[in-house]
Image (cartoon, rainbow, N blue to C red; front, side, top):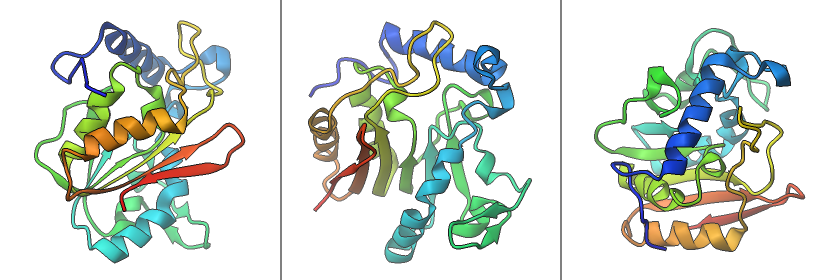
Length: 212
Protein backbone atom coordinates (compact mmCIF):
# COMPACT_ATOMS: atom_id res chain seq x y z
CA UNK A 1 0.00 0.00 0.00
CA UNK A 2 1.57 3.25 -1.11
CA UNK A 3 1.33 6.19 1.27
CA UNK A 4 -0.49 9.12 -0.35
CA UNK A 5 0.35 11.37 2.59
CA UNK A 6 3.43 11.99 4.74
CA UNK A 7 4.68 13.69 7.89
CA UNK A 8 5.24 16.84 5.84
CA UNK A 9 1.85 16.49 4.15
CA UNK A 10 -0.63 14.65 6.40
CA UNK A 11 -4.25 14.24 5.40
CA UNK A 12 -6.93 16.77 6.40
CA UNK A 13 -8.40 14.05 8.61
CA UNK A 14 -5.07 13.66 10.42
CA UNK A 15 -5.06 17.37 11.21
CA UNK A 16 -8.65 17.22 12.45
CA UNK A 17 -7.96 14.22 14.66
CA UNK A 18 -4.84 15.87 16.04
CA UNK A 19 -6.95 18.79 17.22
CA UNK A 20 -9.36 16.34 18.87
CA UNK A 21 -6.58 14.55 20.74
CA UNK A 22 -4.91 17.81 21.75
CA UNK A 23 -8.23 18.94 23.25
CA UNK A 24 -8.56 15.69 25.20
CA UNK A 25 -5.01 16.01 26.52
CA UNK A 26 -5.53 19.57 27.70
CA UNK A 27 -9.16 19.48 28.86
CA UNK A 28 -9.90 15.82 29.50
CA UNK A 29 -13.43 14.53 28.92
CA UNK A 30 -15.61 15.71 31.84
CA UNK A 31 -18.70 14.16 30.27
CA UNK A 32 -16.90 10.78 30.41
CA UNK A 33 -15.56 11.41 33.91
CA UNK A 34 -11.94 11.64 32.73
CA UNK A 35 -9.78 14.49 34.03
CA UNK A 36 -7.08 16.01 31.83
CA UNK A 37 -4.25 14.44 33.85
CA UNK A 38 -5.86 11.01 33.44
CA UNK A 39 -6.32 11.26 29.69
CA UNK A 40 -3.84 9.16 27.69
CA UNK A 41 -1.36 8.88 30.59
CA UNK A 42 0.76 6.27 28.84
CA UNK A 43 -0.12 3.50 31.29
CA UNK A 44 -0.93 0.94 28.60
CA UNK A 45 2.79 0.34 28.15
CA UNK A 46 2.87 -1.43 31.52
CA UNK A 47 1.33 -4.62 30.12
CA UNK A 48 4.18 -4.85 27.62
CA UNK A 49 7.00 -4.59 30.16
CA UNK A 50 7.81 -8.30 30.28
CA UNK A 51 8.04 -8.75 26.47
CA UNK A 52 10.20 -5.63 26.32
CA UNK A 53 12.51 -6.89 29.08
CA UNK A 54 12.92 -10.13 27.14
CA UNK A 55 13.82 -8.15 24.02
CA UNK A 56 16.31 -6.03 25.97
CA UNK A 57 17.98 -9.15 27.34
CA UNK A 58 18.21 -10.73 23.90
CA UNK A 59 19.05 -7.75 21.69
CA UNK A 60 21.13 -5.59 24.07
CA UNK A 61 19.39 -2.33 23.12
CA UNK A 62 21.08 0.88 24.22
CA UNK A 63 18.47 3.38 23.01
CA UNK A 64 14.68 3.48 22.73
CA UNK A 65 11.97 5.76 21.37
CA UNK A 66 8.45 5.62 22.77
CA UNK A 67 6.43 6.85 19.78
CA UNK A 68 3.00 8.09 20.85
CA UNK A 69 3.92 8.09 24.52
CA UNK A 70 0.95 10.15 25.71
CA UNK A 71 1.74 11.87 29.02
CA UNK A 72 4.45 9.24 29.63
CA UNK A 73 3.60 8.92 33.32
CA UNK A 74 5.45 5.62 33.67
CA UNK A 75 8.74 7.39 32.96
CA UNK A 76 8.31 9.90 35.78
CA UNK A 77 9.77 8.89 39.17
CA UNK A 78 6.64 10.00 41.02
CA UNK A 79 5.34 6.74 42.46
CA UNK A 80 6.68 3.20 42.60
CA UNK A 81 5.46 0.99 39.78
CA UNK A 82 4.51 -2.53 40.80
CA UNK A 83 5.23 -5.10 38.11
CA UNK A 84 3.37 -8.33 37.52
CA UNK A 85 6.05 -10.29 39.39
CA UNK A 86 5.76 -8.03 42.43
CA UNK A 87 8.93 -6.01 41.85
CA UNK A 88 8.76 -2.26 42.35
CA UNK A 89 10.63 0.40 40.39
CA UNK A 90 10.39 4.17 40.51
CA UNK A 91 9.98 4.48 36.74
CA UNK A 92 10.41 2.45 33.57
CA UNK A 93 13.76 4.02 32.75
CA UNK A 94 15.14 2.59 35.98
CA UNK A 95 13.89 -0.85 34.97
CA UNK A 96 15.15 -0.68 31.38
CA UNK A 97 18.48 0.82 32.36
CA UNK A 98 18.63 3.35 29.52
CA UNK A 99 17.39 6.83 28.75
CA UNK A 100 14.21 6.76 26.68
CA UNK A 101 13.24 9.40 24.12
CA UNK A 102 9.58 10.39 24.16
CA UNK A 103 7.37 11.59 21.31
CA UNK A 104 3.67 12.32 21.03
CA UNK A 105 2.47 14.90 18.49
CA UNK A 106 -0.79 15.47 20.40
CA UNK A 107 0.86 16.30 23.74
CA UNK A 108 2.80 19.56 23.72
CA UNK A 109 5.69 18.60 26.08
CA UNK A 110 6.67 15.74 23.76
CA UNK A 111 5.44 17.08 20.42
CA UNK A 112 8.82 17.83 18.80
CA UNK A 113 9.75 15.00 16.41
CA UNK A 114 12.85 13.15 17.62
CA UNK A 115 16.20 13.38 15.91
CA UNK A 116 18.30 10.43 14.82
CA UNK A 117 17.51 6.75 15.14
CA UNK A 118 17.09 4.29 18.01
CA UNK A 119 17.81 0.62 18.60
CA UNK A 120 14.18 0.03 19.59
CA UNK A 121 11.00 1.90 18.68
CA UNK A 122 7.95 1.14 20.84
CA UNK A 123 4.44 2.20 19.83
CA UNK A 124 1.61 1.03 22.11
CA UNK A 125 -2.04 2.05 22.07
CA UNK A 126 -1.41 4.44 19.18
CA UNK A 127 -1.93 3.15 15.65
CA UNK A 128 -5.67 2.51 15.95
CA UNK A 129 -6.01 6.18 16.95
CA UNK A 130 -4.55 7.30 13.62
CA UNK A 131 -6.52 8.04 10.46
CA UNK A 132 -6.47 5.13 8.02
CA UNK A 133 -5.11 7.20 5.14
CA UNK A 134 -2.13 8.22 7.29
CA UNK A 135 -1.36 4.84 8.84
CA UNK A 136 1.03 3.81 6.00
CA UNK A 137 3.37 6.74 6.48
CA UNK A 138 3.14 6.55 10.27
CA UNK A 139 4.14 2.87 10.25
CA UNK A 140 6.89 3.70 7.75
CA UNK A 141 8.09 6.38 10.17
CA UNK A 142 8.34 3.82 12.98
CA UNK A 143 10.69 1.77 10.82
CA UNK A 144 12.67 4.82 9.74
CA UNK A 145 13.41 5.63 13.40
CA UNK A 146 14.42 2.05 14.25
CA UNK A 147 17.91 0.64 13.82
CA UNK A 148 17.13 -2.83 15.18
CA UNK A 149 13.52 -3.45 16.23
CA UNK A 150 9.96 -2.08 16.11
CA UNK A 151 7.52 -3.26 18.79
CA UNK A 152 3.88 -2.19 18.58
CA UNK A 153 0.38 -3.24 19.50
CA UNK A 154 -2.89 -2.56 17.69
CA UNK A 155 -6.44 -2.74 19.02
CA UNK A 156 -8.83 -4.10 16.38
CA UNK A 157 -12.00 -3.16 18.26
CA UNK A 158 -13.80 0.04 19.38
CA UNK A 159 -12.49 2.07 22.33
CA UNK A 160 -14.42 3.03 25.44
CA UNK A 161 -13.39 6.67 24.96
CA UNK A 162 -14.98 9.00 22.43
CA UNK A 163 -13.51 12.12 20.86
CA UNK A 164 -14.99 15.58 21.50
CA UNK A 165 -16.80 15.31 18.15
CA UNK A 166 -18.51 12.08 19.28
CA UNK A 167 -16.38 9.76 17.16
CA UNK A 168 -14.94 6.61 18.70
CA UNK A 169 -11.34 7.15 19.81
CA UNK A 170 -10.26 4.05 17.86
CA UNK A 171 -10.85 5.76 14.56
CA UNK A 172 -9.23 3.02 12.45
CA UNK A 173 -10.61 -0.45 13.13
CA UNK A 174 -9.33 -2.98 10.61
CA UNK A 175 -8.60 -6.68 10.40
CA UNK A 176 -5.19 -8.29 10.72
CA UNK A 177 -4.77 -8.70 6.96
CA UNK A 178 -5.13 -4.94 6.45
CA UNK A 179 -2.51 -4.17 9.08
CA UNK A 180 -0.21 -6.91 7.84
CA UNK A 181 -0.08 -5.44 4.34
CA UNK A 182 0.89 -2.04 5.72
CA UNK A 183 3.49 -3.41 8.14
CA UNK A 184 5.13 -5.67 5.56
CA UNK A 185 5.24 -2.87 2.98
CA UNK A 186 7.06 -0.61 5.44
CA UNK A 187 9.31 -3.42 6.67
CA UNK A 188 10.42 -4.22 3.11
CA UNK A 189 12.21 -0.87 3.03
CA UNK A 190 14.17 -1.80 6.17
CA UNK A 191 15.15 -5.47 5.68
CA UNK A 192 17.57 -5.56 8.64
CA UNK A 193 15.01 -4.24 11.14
CA UNK A 194 13.07 -6.85 13.07
CA UNK A 195 9.50 -6.22 14.19
CA UNK A 196 6.55 -7.47 16.18
CA UNK A 197 3.06 -5.94 15.85
CA UNK A 198 0.52 -7.51 18.22
CA UNK A 199 -3.08 -7.25 17.02
CA UNK A 200 -5.73 -7.68 19.71
CA UNK A 201 -9.05 -8.86 18.28
CA UNK A 202 -12.58 -8.10 19.59
CA UNK A 203 -12.58 -11.38 21.56
CA UNK A 204 -9.27 -10.28 23.17
CA UNK A 205 -7.27 -12.99 21.40
CA UNK A 206 -4.01 -11.84 19.86
CA UNK A 207 -2.33 -12.31 16.50
CA UNK A 208 1.27 -11.26 15.90
CA UNK A 209 2.64 -9.79 12.70
CA UNK A 210 6.34 -10.42 13.09
CA UNK A 211 9.58 -10.74 11.20
CA UNK A 212 10.86 -14.26 10.60
